[in-house]
Image 1: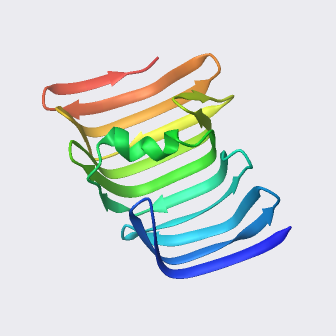
Image 2: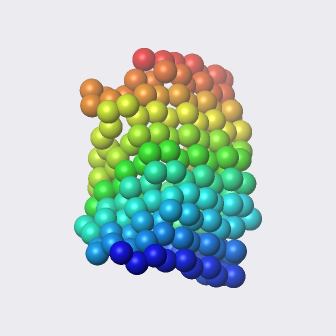
Length: 178
């Protein structure tokens, strides 16, 4: 087992520049454990810990992104494409705080998101007790333009229980659960 500690003044990952990068962890055969990951990215911060298994799958125990300001030339589908290339992505806890993201036909402002206990594999998901809480000032996807959307959902092997969805849009307001 080898211990690793890496720091860089700047680097780029998937065309996203990062500064003040610090990575600490270990390598044990084909398993990479990142016990401490931190960087300044897209005018915000990223911190967390994760593990990459021999098959290329990731287990993200904790990932927190705050104050991210990111503009992309990619469509929303292409923006998330790198996640679909991973054999499996297990998320223990993902927190996004006050993010502003924008692409050619999509945008989200003042995004706060909390995702817990979810595993994504290709274009599918699985969980025993997954939870999603999300709110934003605006969400734009093509001609859909939502103001102040709030989503709270619980995920289980039986499916998705939508606990709350509330939003305003140009045509009025929508509230639902179930």
